[in-house]
Amino acid sequence: MILLADLGNRSLSLSIYENRQEKASFKTLSDKFKSADEYQETLRQFLRLQNLTPKDIDGAILASVVPSLTKRVEKAINTVLDKECLLLDRKLKTGLAIRMDNPSEVGSNLISAAIGAINDYQEDCLIICLSSCLSLTLATKDKQFLGGSLFPGMRESVSHMCETNAQLMEIDLGRPNKLIAKSTKECINSGVVKGYMHLVDSLADEMEQEFGKPLRRILTGPDANILQSFMGHKYTYNPHLLMDGLYDIYIKNTFLNK
Image 1 (cartoon, rainbow, N blue to C red):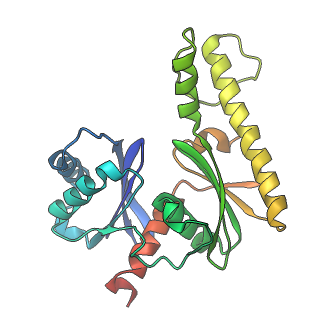
Image 2: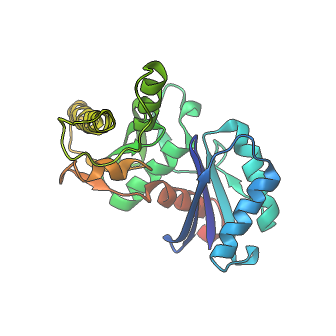
């Protein structure tokens, strides 16, 4: 069994995979004030909840887009498992050719999701990740990362709007019942969710046109479930895409691939 860790700006997601299948998962807030010892206890609690011990875990890999926390989380995993955790950086083999002006700028989350998409579908893919940032990235079936577009995430847009408009309040986003809403909270929800739905659809259409060939459009990320029921048959919902790719990268870089 392999421990996969995805450290994002909002949360730290942990998954245990065996034979490319998720066996268990856990999510906690990314807390810049937590020590390595506190992250160790979080990991120990996760394993205990699954009736597992560190000896049950054969290895681990971490993808991080939060540099200030990377070393702490990496140290926590190394200490609890008593094994060296792989860190997804430029030194690891991914098999992905990054066709960007500065490849080192591409986040490890985008790389993992691209590998997951290519290996899951064997098609040219448009990966739409809805998290703290909305990213639309293009990865081809011959394992080229061609670039994409970035936009503020849905929840981050709400937070900024509420910070700059005194009479507006933070809300929990969900499926709106109608666009013409009757309360301020419902107005925010309908505007943001429906607005992002049309934003994603419009950008996806334009990117496919620019690429010149059909793309499999994949919705993923922690907020993708909010949009997926609106998006129709043109979109595939896959909440495991990043972890699938992270598992594949681990296998490619360890003895399990030999």
